[in-house]
Image 1 (cartoon, one colour):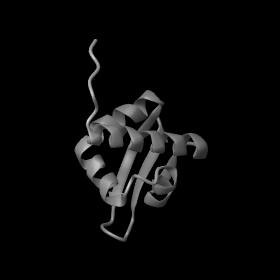
Image 2 (cartoon, one colour; image 1 turned 45 degrees about the vertical axis):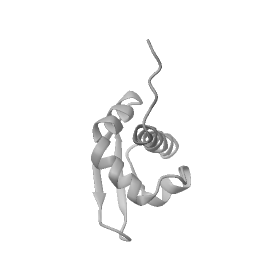
Image 3 (cartoon, helix red, strand yellow; image 1 turned 90 degrees about the horizontal axis):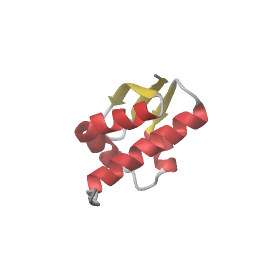
Image 4 (spheres, one colour; image 1 turned 120 degrees about the horizontal axis):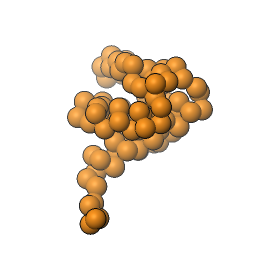
Amino acid sequence: MAFKAKSAAETKTAELASALIRIADREGAPTTIGVDELRRASPRLTPLAIGQLFRRHREDLEAALAERGYTLVDYADQGPGRGMEFEIAAA
């Protein structure tokens, strides 16, 4: 199979999924993960990027979480400066 280069969005989506999984592994499920925790896990993930990646690539995020035995229960975005959270549970 030929190598297919990933787009920047695919790379950042994988990075977001990886950060969510690492935090869920560390904290245990169920857990609520805020943007500050994600920024500490991966400083390249800005709040704007996180929101856009979730809206555009939700299926990819859910698939990556499912591979590790997690499920995305809820995502809340209160708007700029008011916070966002991912609620993750064990599948």
